[in-house]
Amino acid sequence: MHYDPISYFLLLLSVCFLTSCYSVRLRNVNGTPQPDPFSDRDDYYRGMAVVEVDTTIGINMTSKDFTYLIKEKEACESGKINIIEYRSTFGGLLLNAITFGKKRKVKIKYVCEKP
Image (cartoon, rainbow, N blue to C red):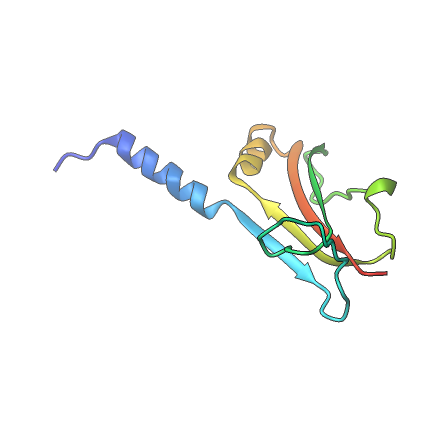
């Protein structure tokens, strides 16, 4: 049997695409999410006022963590967050690897607590 190395590479790349995307969602079960009656979403956040942050940040190679400060216009009126979701994608992992950890792609969704 002859195995094509290009086929193996494409198979490995497709497996990486499937395994390298994940989301982590945290929710406060004791609170009520901020409603948005005009939302036309049909996902988990249906009927909720969702704030999405999609940005690239730069950090030192030796740093293991970072702090993203929420701008005033993105801040919650109640001062509390009900749901927060962090998403990691294959593109974000590639950017992190190519820049040796200096750049990180951040995708966050959050819903404020109802005031």
